[in-house]
Image (cartoon, rainbow, N blue to C red; front, side, top):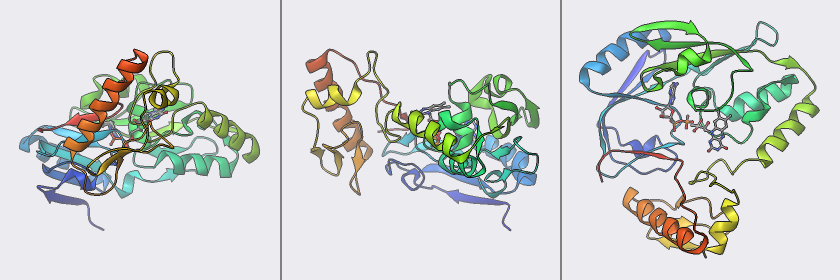
Length: 270
Ligand SMILES: Cc1cc2nc3c(=O)[nH]c(=O)nc-3n(C[C@H](O)[C@H](O)[C@H](O)COP(=O)(O)OP(=O)(O)OC[C@H]3O[C@@H](n4cnc5c(N)ncnc54)[C@H](O)[C@@H]3O)c2cc1C
């Protein structure tokens, strides 16, 4: 089994949900935990290191971005279910896969994550209230693997790579868990929403009122059925997405007085 895959000048369009973006200096995919600390050390000597999850909230501009991206692979994509409801979940596990496993086992606790896209590690790193279900977190800090609380793992978050977390799940039934997930999913924006929910809510209604739907700039499009999305029809550039987002933002401000904020973190040069 390969420990680490190194891809030089790798276009990040291949690794982000937006499917746009030029190359980074290098992308490291670390499959074995035994190779992780050395990989981070070497990567840090090459330049700034950015942790990459499943790329649903990161997008890179056409000019690319300098530095190294590090993604967690096989060893971090496992769920250890050997201790009852105390599941240890790897950072690379997709949130939807974790939800499905918990539903199948009839265990309650992660329902609130229904509708959240991307990797479990990135969800843990996000500023949301998950303390109640997280018993402990393993993370990398200053060249060492540590175990601590979620709060500790998030401190100075940019420099701490989350590897896994042990959750406290409680017995329930698959049906009850499924219903709770359905309710949680209905209460949030679709997973691919380009925008954060504005103050006062009603994102979709505001976009529709502003005449956004089936608006297109080259290969980037806002679909009428789900105007909170910006879809890459294939071959869009970050500049197209930018322009479409800017025009949507301007229109919503003009028609509803609300200033929209993107959910996606843009990196790199235009
Ligand atoms: C309770 C809750 C509710 C949420 N609700 C929504 C929602 O309704 N809709 C929505 O779109 N999003 C929501 N989010 C945010 C969403 O979970 C994250 O944005 C998403 O998980 C990104 O996953 P990704 O793997 O695609 O991350 P990426 O896009 O790859 O990265 C996103 C950020 O996380 C960092 N990161 C990635 N992996 C790690 C790691 N292992 N350790 C530390 N940092 C890391 C990256 O450096 C980057 O800054 C919610 C999060 C939580 C916790």
